[in-house]
Image (cartoon, rainbow, N blue to C red; front, top):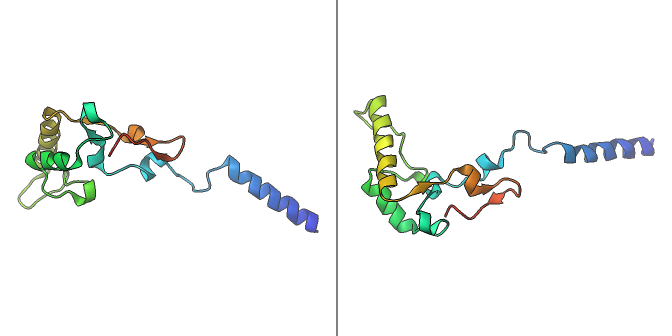
Length: 121
């Protein structure tokens, strides 16, 4: 009987390696830094001046930074859905004109090692 329990326990433990222990885990979603950190200056990727970047986004129209996730898609009083879309496009266009490039989750996160890549500060 003990042998049967040990055998079942061993099979269960070996199955953990074949399957994700956390179903649906995606390191690109789970570890992704706030949206603002994906915006980098090309010559200082991973070392972009965070205070200057914040000022640049503010000058482009961001009102609330929400811990780095920003208010690009927020609907403020008196705004239509089209206004929200236009505002979001205007902010992105403005920040690109200031020389920033956007690095997506796959560049900010090292999915193979389940850690941040260091490119998005």
